[in-house]
Image (cartoon, rainbow, N blue to C red):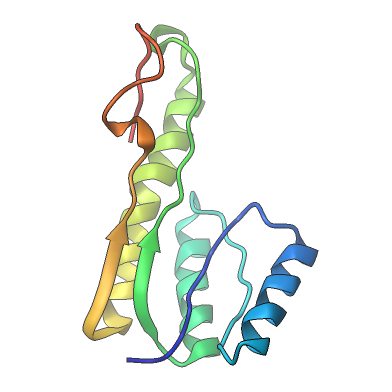
Amino acid sequence: MHPVIHYFYYLLSQWEQNHFVKMLRRLGRKAVAIQADSASPEAVRGAISQTVAALGGLDILVNNAGIARGGLLEDMALEDIDAMINVNIRGLVVATQAALPHLGKGGRIINIGSCLAERVPMAASASMP
């Protein structure tokens, strides 16, 4: 196992990413900031490859990307449905496929679902994974 922290968080600004990486390095950790669009298979595969190249391996994959598009199901545009499926389902599968060859014995994959998985926020609303 590599003593590495792998952390992806898309919404951080470039300054915040650099600050976070510097903070981890001051703590003696290996760190790199890589930004990728979870809806793009090429970007997801590239992020995994860049992580492995920069940090020397992969111990854990945490699939935590997710989006939601609000509104009534009957009013939802196909573009919104496609966007949710691309990020919430396909992105998870592509990331897992890309990570598997790099996870050695003891490697882990953690899939984090939505807080809406058990209960939707209001009656007559629907949530997609």
